[in-house]
Image 1: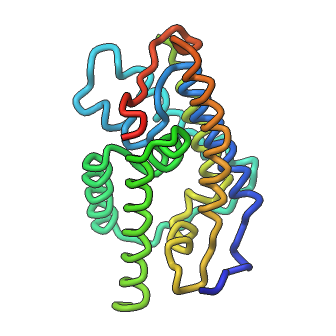
Image 2 (image 1 turned 180 degrees about the vertical axis):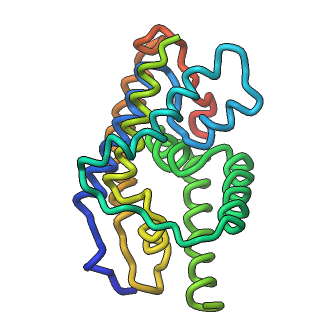
Length: 142
Length: 80
């Protein structure tokens, strides 16, 4: 293992993390909901009476965020994948997060912050699956 | 129901993702590539996020309702 010091950004990573955690703390304290991106979206399918407004508002804020983050001069993200790969990846992420009842924000941030064993197991599982997948794609097949 | 608060939460969440670099798939992949040039940044995002979230959930656990008066919709299996 060798650390990529040129691209390692501990300061901005930690600062961004604090902002994400603040959003999670705010949502539970003010509105009483868990901040899980996949769960917020999944609750709209099918939509339930009186339970859609906050979800749509949160997702709108999430999508609008890059506009507000522009003055921060963060370099643009590059997505090097074609449409078919993105759709296939999206279906896998969607099925997996429903099967596991959460994603990086729901289990990884909120679940771990709640000291939930179920979330610890889910986080360990999807992180390990990511390590294995990238190893196979980059070092075995690639 | 109040929609300004969830909108601001989404906005903060997204800004946090942009600031941390996690909107860039290359950065996430670099974290997952243990055998390559490893970028541990994602772990710093997680630690940074868990600290305020931990405090938020601790404070929430002491209350009967959220600040908006809405009941808590938090998973009940606390340690399962």
